[in-house]
Image (cartoon, rainbow, N blue to C red; front, top):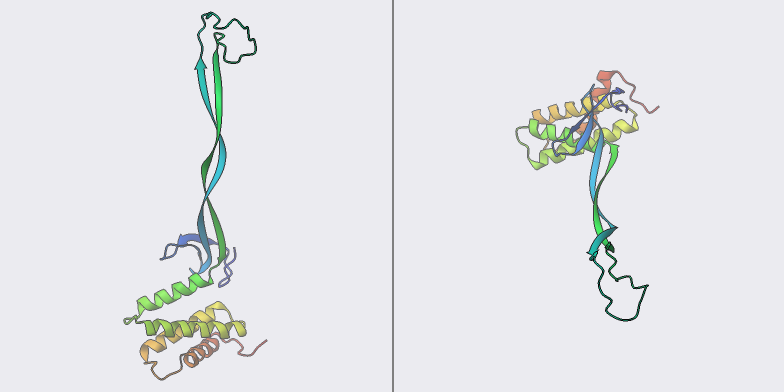
Length: 194
């Protein structure tokens, strides 16, 4: 496993705040992989053999009829005879399957959760504005093929700016793009498509 953010190769298995199992990078702490585990309850039919033992007397009994029927299976011979019954019964099998996929959604949830807990007014409009800004920064950064560190720094700049000023009657996307341009200048990266 290689971290797409810092290219480290060590991961730590843990769970998110919502309880889902995730893999975090030990170097930068970002979510690299997320796992979804599903339980399946299957019922297979299994043949059940139930023996029915019949004990017969070992003493000879007088013949009831005058006919000597040597092929009578129920004639007491002094042995223990066992019959068995077969039945098909459902047998439960509990299985789990696990699917692993990239941790981008879990990383987005982590970023938005830290944003909503760090702001004093965690209203729904602040969370929506942060989500719009994060998606704008990620879109533009993916077009310019920028590192994840630059986009994370741009989102941090946006959060600092939005907490210092009021975003009413201002374009969230324009402010997010301006934060990305400032983060690119700080990182001294080229701002043109390659």
